[in-house]
Length: 453
Image (cartoon, rainbow, N blue to C red):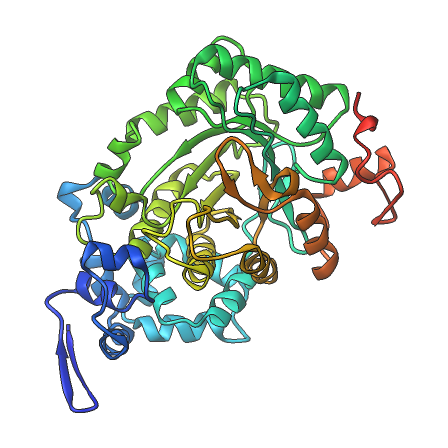
């Protein structure tokens, strides 16, 4: 394996493949903070040049966290499709990139190869791509899943209705839910971030949202984003839970910071399959974000894109209904400004789909990041063009509980119109039946929350 190259008369030598991966990454404040970023653009280009000639076999043989030390690495390696991998093991990362962008390569072709790809391979490929490359390649790939709705179909764009309240006030949460539904939001999930992480609160919020859904025949899923152990207890008590949620990261150590393990996730998955209320088989909901492993000192000296891709490798084990990269939420310490957030959103979406995961994105930022609403809206359009499955849906795009900015009910309707997208088929039929739309066009009743007393 050649880990050096000469560029403009200067020789750049890298100590191992982990360093090549890190220094080939686009500029991220988190990588700078971790001390793994390229010193300058020339070193970054040199690392990309070296990475382009690395084979897929070499990447598989050198995960950024050793097999013996990490259960995420073991989950990925043990599940890999050896027969399919044998057909591409000699490909270089550069060849994989060219194959993905080739006009003759279809989304079905990519999904057939996906079980043979490791997260390090996906991340390496992303590092050789421009933003437009990431959009073009990801747009081909459609990961179709089923819970109460059918998710991931071409020509569809969904949203998570996020009716958070700083007091967990039931009536306030239901009021926001009614408004969001009236604006055509919520076909991905009605998902509440609770203030109180208790079994009682989780049970009450799940029951309240499910009651509203049943009363108005809303064909979607509900979820309360409490810790997985809280949801498991609520489900054991009979709570009507469609999707089981948990934040995950790309290493065993980082996941310990979330209070989880593969064994616990296996138990949660088995429980929701046995007792969950969703109709379809895909009943897990994960959230991730570049920088989460570094924030818990669980990055093992690797760059944040590679660690993020490893979280998708773990998620793949459970065939989730949705995985949401909360791309700007973690703050400027990890993604400093609008261009870094934009790049991370496109990278995450591409890597997740390449690994066969149903991907959405919280197009968002914290108020101390060096970005603004215009860049948020631009990223939403770019991700829409890339075939992203869903965004968040918030009143005016402002989360009054988590105190960050995201996409609004109106933003999602506008992006659907702009790009010619529709909600899930089940939700689209429901909107027509409720008089919110007619022949796919908004009616005067669109946005009228009084339709849902």
